[in-house]
Each structure stands twice: as structure tokens, then as C-alpha cells.
Image (cartoon, rainbow, N blue to C red; front, side, top):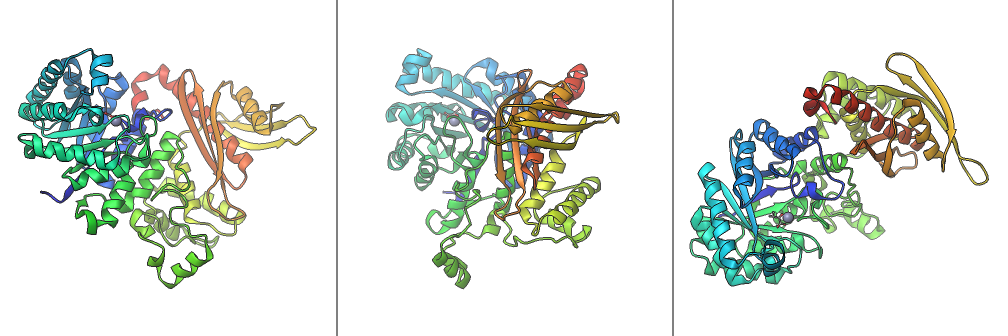
Length: 517
Ligand code: KIV
Ligand code: ZN
């Protein structure tokens, strides 16, 4: 049996099904390129029949992202499969992933189909997909709650019809490791021709067992794991890519498997996905959480200083966290900054580098110590701020008990005019947001607002994140500053600029797909 573990990333399909995680075309492309750099074997780019946006994204990824196999999801019906093929055609290595539920509860209440009907449709689906291409995956949805003998029968027929990968989803996160492993073992023993296909696992995390279940299945011969960055996905999410990959790497002694993942790209990819989706990573999340490599207890710190492996089973640099936290000072030059930005995994052009350099100098004047996280925050701001129609010139606000919260804001419009206004609100931040709305004429429905410190020092920069709705579309803004009031105003203004840009693009729709943020 092969000792190569195939990593199938479904951040752009199942991950996008996370509440609030929908992404636009440019964002999906950016993530797909990052997944290629990370070294995933397969990118499930979307569900082409689900919407024109999904179709376009799968097609664009198929056209532009070379290296990994590009996969599109389809139900077992002609329209879905034809549409998936249409989107995937440009890919060098396309895969169609067809699925059909098999559990008793889905058969009876969702599909109203008997077992023989399910088998007939599954075979038809796989056969139709195989007429288009040679790489076809079949998933019996809710497999983990399907009668084992029936599951074996469906899987066998799917392989007979030409499925090259058979995926065994725990769709509702119901399985526990021993039982899930036993199901894989049952298929290995009872499915004729099982060795002709790769066995894949796809676990949801409703009981917090997605990674444990996926790993248990490896011991029984599964060789493909379906997973997402940061464990994004329906409800409680999917198996987390970073956890499963690092478990297999760190415990190579136990699993004896190797993946093609460049683990040093794990943290940058996790941050990218978090920034794009606006879904923060919990601080104590394994591998990519802010605290994953932080040692607080004195005894641990002492042990670490004596020998890192006393309390550390992985090296932070192996997941892309640089150990050298302390970076540049105010006397550092452009050359050192360029090198640091490269080390952190960013590719900036000269103009972007110049912008970061200017912001870095201002920051170094305000802040005693500039950390890697500060530089990352500046690079991300420059990379993703987009063209500004309005720029913040000044902001002040007033709050506290016994006063009416108020704010004064000065904005520049790109035509050169300065606009000023002041107003009140439910709190000082609300007063700022309302004043900006009045000045720019853009009405936003705020859905989420958060502030966090980028580093742990007293003069840390604050990062403000905003999610707001404009004309039914969710837009996000993010900004950092040593002043959280300023960061909040900047993040809000970024959303305003995006809403205005979107309005302009709607008047000229040909350009929307490539430039909208
Ligand atoms: O969870 C699930 O069953 C799925 C299938 C489409 C594979 O996402
Ligand atoms: Zn799923």
C-alpha cells in the first residue's frame, strides 16, 4: 500500500459553506494560488451548478491554477455533471466529484428513493462523469450512518462504473474513531475491486472528532483526506488541514505516511483564509492559533531554554512561524525590510514595498518594538486595501459615562476636496461610523466589528475588522494602527470604499469579476 497521503482541500467548497464565509472570485483565486503553494494535491474549487459565481470561480481556477488537480462537485444527475465538466474543462488535471446520499434517513426523508434506485443513480452519475474524464470521485453522502453492507454494495458498484476515488463522508460528524475505522476496514474486506480506487475520508467536526476520525481511517488504508484550512466548513466545520498534516508529519513514526505539503506555508495560508473570510482563528487552535507555540508557565519556559523539545513537539518554523520575533528598528533600511517581508512569505512589488516602508517608519517612531506580526499586518493592509476613493485625514471621539458619545471626522475625497462633519451615536465608535456614512453617502448595515491586539506588548498595534452589508452583499474591512480608534475608522472607511467601487463596477460590469474585492 502506498505511503503517500493525498491532501484534498475543500476550503473553497465545503469551507465556503461556513456561515459568513462566502468569497468573491478574486478572493477564491488568491486562496487557490496559496493552496497550490502550500502543496495540496487536489483543490475542490466549488459546486459549479450551485450558482453562476461558483461556476465562474471553478472555471477561473481551472484556467489559472496549475499543479494540483482541480475538482468540481456535482450531484448524480446529468445537469450537474455536465455543468461541472463545462467549468473544469480548461484544467490540466480535472476531477469530477459526484455524490448521492445513502443512509436510511436520507433515502427515506430527503430522496424518497429505495436502495436499488440509489445504486442505479450512483452508477449513472459515475458513468456520465467518466464519459468526460478519467478522474472521478464518488461520495455516498452520510456514509457514516449508512448500513455497512449497503455501503459496501454502493461503493463496489461505483468502482465498477469507473470511480477512481471513493470518499466515505461523515456528513453530520456522528462517527467516533474506532467505529469509523471499522467502517473503512469493512469496505477493505468486503468491496470487490477496492484496491482499484483510492479510499478517501471526509469528516465533519460536530463532536470535535473530525481530525481523530480521519487519522483513525488512515490506519485502515484510507489514503486521501478531505480537509479545510482552519477547519472551516458546514456547522462546526471539516477536518482541519493543518492539524491532520502536522499529526502525520510529527507522528511519522506511527503513521508511516508522507504528504506533499510544504508545512512552512501553513501559517501564511491560515492567515490568508482568516483574513479573506473574516473568520478569526481561535487563540488556542492547534498549529495556527496565536498561543499554539507560546509558553507561559515558568517551568515550561525554563525547560524550553534548556532544550526546546522538553515542551515542544513541533518547531514553530516548520509551520511557517519564524522564531525571530524581534525584527526591525527605526534605523532599519529598505533592504532589511524587503528581506523580512520575503521571509514572511509576501510578494510585494516596488510600489507596495515603498508603501510598507513608509508605514513601517511611522510605526517605528510610535512603537518601541516592531515584531514580525506588525510587519505582516502592514503588508496585508497594503496588499488588500484596494483603491481608495475616500481617505481618513483625522478622527476624534468622545465617550464615557454621563456624556453623549460623539465624533468628528475629516475625510479627503480623491477629487481633492476635504469634507468634515461631527455627530453623535450609541457609543463613540458608532458615532464615528455614522459620521463617515453621512460624509460619504454610503449606508452600511454593520454585521460584525472586532478589535484585537496584533502582538502582546503594551504599545501593540490594534487590528480592527469589520463586516458590513451593502445592497445585499457582505463586505469586509481591516486596518491596523497603534490607535484602535483610528484603526476602526480606517477599517470602516475601507468597507465604504469597497461599496463605492462595487457601485462603479456595477455600472461597468465587464470589469467586476476581475477587480471586485
Ligand atoms: O459532507 C458531505 O457529505 C459532503 C459531500 C458532498 C462529500 O460534503
Ligand atoms: Zn462535507
